[in-house]
Image (cartoon, rainbow, N blue to C red):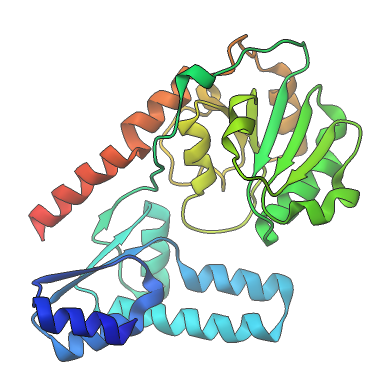
Length: 291
């Protein structure tokens, strides 16, 4: 990638280069060394050193240790050689300052493509609401789902579906009376349309959770932790509920007044205002007008 990027630089001689990840810090260094007058703008989608450290702490594998040092070095190079840094949230900006002594220059929250088809919205035909977890199998998701199945699921009057790449391997561990594991699917949208709510029992991580934006885009009621909602500006009770304990999940899921139509107008409005691609384009236009 570095060779190709430098070849494009030599041919096009741009005034700015936009790098869409702090994982390409070595590329930022190479560009700045060869073309010191070029302005480098790097979008930090995460604080990678924290995420990779959490992976090492959880999994304790030598390969993850090596990845940690690679992520850390690239991120430091991105900090050092970027003229402008964009982060997802105030939390990430503060964490960058804590670790590297440099805050983000601008914030652009996570966005999600608008895929909603209003014609596919469904209505409830039974009394028991249906909730889904959507996310691939990696350690924060696995921990959160296992915790939810053990401490919350037996006490809620709802059907829970677990959807996401890799989760089928945990089918025997997770399934119980009201929990069904779907695992990998071709198209997750049909499950969003048929769900009354989304659960997001995420307790670790950094950045913003893309699945929260996806749930807002589909107009879903969301019951999630502080981590799942980190970086999002919304009224928790109007989009669902903020839940950090088993009792909070149980009470809010059982006590929520689910409408007959499986659609939360407030969630959809929040998505359109703050987390749509159109809003993201507007923010980027403003940023490039300023730098």
